[in-house]
Length: 158
Image (cartoon, rainbow, N blue to C red; front, side):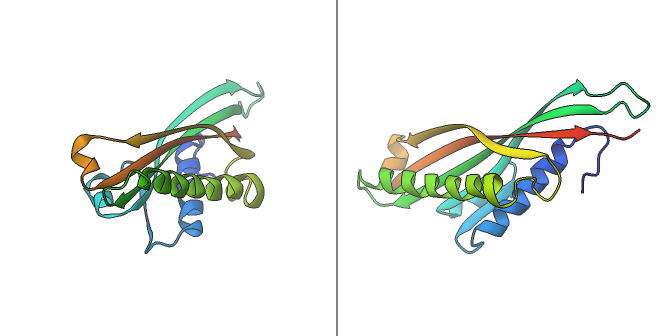
């Protein structure tokens, strides 16, 4: 249940992290609130709920003065596989996209309101890139996905 009368951004981010943690095996995927930092470096698969951005518009002008809110959350997925094989970048990309699909399906089909925090939530943007820094190539391949999930909600209260 939403806890803020100023914005639901914090609640949206928390609900998304809770949903992601319910979808993945914690022994296989490191999940974090914000950038994973050094702790994430020892994991092959990492998912972080990162930036949340909100926009508000006046919804009603009564005594409640509710606002219509658009929330955008960046979910960052990184997959690494050790080895010096060019095919590993595709392996990493496949895994990262599989994790993204898992989250996308959940918010679009299974828990569309993220526990009642938002009215609806959809994947609205996605970027994928391989990390081909020379220092990393000797150790393995890495792919990062930045996905944007957009939700709508009504903010009410005093």
